[in-house]
Image (cartoon, rainbow, N blue to C red; front, side, top):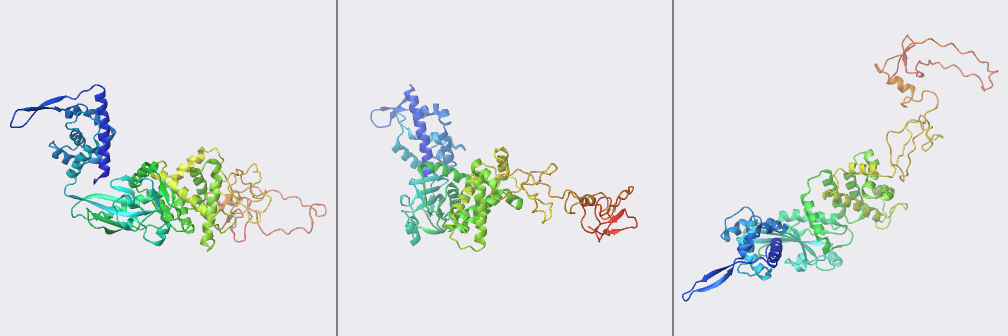
Length: 558
C-alpha cells in the first residue's frame, strides 16, 4: 500500500455503499440476471450473470450524495481520469464516475452486496498500480522528542504521518535515542514524523517540503498542550527501496517540562489544528507573537522563557507605550480569567514584570524554586501561567474563535462585565509641598472637583472610583502650570501670545488705613508695600515682564 489516505477513503465509501445496497435488497429490491453463452467447441453452455452494474446504476444518484463519496473523490483527485481510461470508459474531470467504476469492479459477478474485504484489497491494488505507474514512493523521517502516542499511527493529511517508531518503516537512528541525555529521558522508541510522497523516478527527495510541514506540525503540537516537544535537527529520507540518506531539518530547542501523551481521542482535534496552522494567514502582529511564544517553548530554563512570553503577550495586546502597558493587566485578565479571578491574574502579571526586572538586574536566584523577592510567587509558576495565557490566546486566534484585534475583544468584555472598573488617579495640579497636605488622593471629592480624564492602574489593583480632590489653594491665582489658574487664562486669551490688552476699568477707592494698634489680628510690624503692580486679571507681575507707558498693557515672556 502506497497511499494509506486514499485507501481509507475508498474503503469508507465502499463500506457505505455496501450498507445502502444491502438495505435495498432486504427491502425487496432484486438483482436482474442475464443468460450468457459460454464459448467453446462442443455443445453450447449457458450461465446466469447478475447485472450488478445495472443495479448500482439505478441507485447511483443516491450513492453519489453520500459524504463518504465526496471524501473519496477528493482523495482520488486527478487519478480518476487515468483509472477511467484503464477501465475502458470515457475520461471525465469529475472523480465520481471513477468511484462508480470501482464499485462495479468490486461487485462484478456478485449475487449480494455484503462488503468483500479481500476483494476490495485486490481492487485497490489495481487502482494503485494504475495511478502510480512510473513513480516511486519517497519518504522523509525525523524523530519527535517528548511525545508519546497511544495509537500506532496517526494520519494528519496530505502524506504527513505521526507514528510509533518501531511500527513504521524508518531508520534505526530515528527510532532509538542516540545521545546519553536522550537515552536517560526516553521511555521507549521515539515517535517519528513521516512525509510520504509519490514522485517521478529521478526527482529529488522532498526535503524542503518536509522542513516546512514538520515545523508547522511542531507549532500545532505546542499550541495543543504544554510539554517538552521538539523535532530532531537531522532527518533521513529515501526513494523507493533505496538506502536512507541524511536530510537536514530546521533545528528546534530542547524545551522544558515533561513528555506528554496524545490520547487516541485527541487525534481529530490535533488533525484539525494542524490544518488550521497550515492555512492561517500572515496576521502580522499575531504571527510575530506566535514566533516569540515558540522561542519561549524552546528555552531550557524558566528565567530565559519569561521575557519571551511577556513579549508575546505585549504584542497580542498591542502594548507599544505606557498607556498600553497600564491597560495590559486589565485586558489580559478579561480575556483569560473569570470575573472573580481577574484581580489575582493582574497581580501575578505585575509580579512577572517585577521578576523580569530582577533577572535583568543580575539576580542569581534559582528561578525553578523561588523568585528573587520573597513576596513574589515562585518563578516557575509565574512562567507556566504566562505560557498558558499566551497559548490560549494564540490558539483561539488561529482557530478563529477570537478576532486578532484582542484589545477590542477585551474592552468589550470589560464593558459587559458586572465587575467595577478599577480607577486610580494622581494629583497633577499641586506643588510638591502641597502633595503631602490633607487634600490627598482618596479624600471625598469637593463639589467643584473635576473628574480625571484618564485612569491608571495601580498597585494591587484595588477598586477605587473616587475622584481626585482639588489640590489648588482656595484663593489666589495658583501656578502658571495649573490650567485652572488665572495666569493660564490670560495666556490662553485670543491674540498675539506676547502682547495682552486688558480692558480699562475705573480704579477702586483705596481702603481706609487700619491702625495696627486697633487691629488685634495683626502681630509684628506692618509688611512693606511690594514694588509690584497687580494687573487687572489678578496676575502678579514678575520681574522679567516688560511694561509700556500704558500700565494696562504688558508683555509676558513665553
